[in-house]
Length: 160
Image 1 (cartoon, helix red, strand yellow):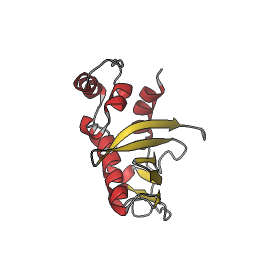
Image 2 (cartoon, one colour):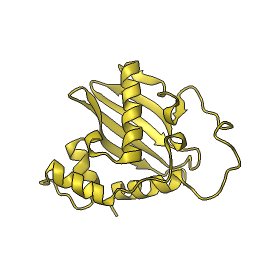
Image 3 (cartoon, one colour):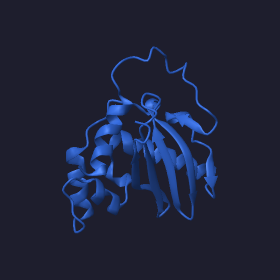
């Protein structure tokens, strides 16, 4: 099974794990370099500005929640679309991605963003959750025509 498919299938499940951890979202804490959902961008490293950090956070959260094709690069869409090959057009890859994407059961508040860094128009941000802290995905975003777009991912389950 393709690692990207595995990440696309498992991360939403991890973020919506069964059971109640008996803590309200107000009880959860995070350190200075980590944030959950819309509270603000994690502290950025590299040459990223505060505006870059906010745009990156907004892009990754919107992409996770909506799967909107306009938030991803052409190559990344081809990578995550199940049946798209390297010759697929952006529209074909987008259509295939939209066919397999399903609305997640988690919200922005369930997502933990950390380790934001970037230089020269390329950034990475670690995405995880308090529910399944050993399952994370390192997303790459690329600055394209003034907008940050999701351009890659690296799924990690080392702690499992």
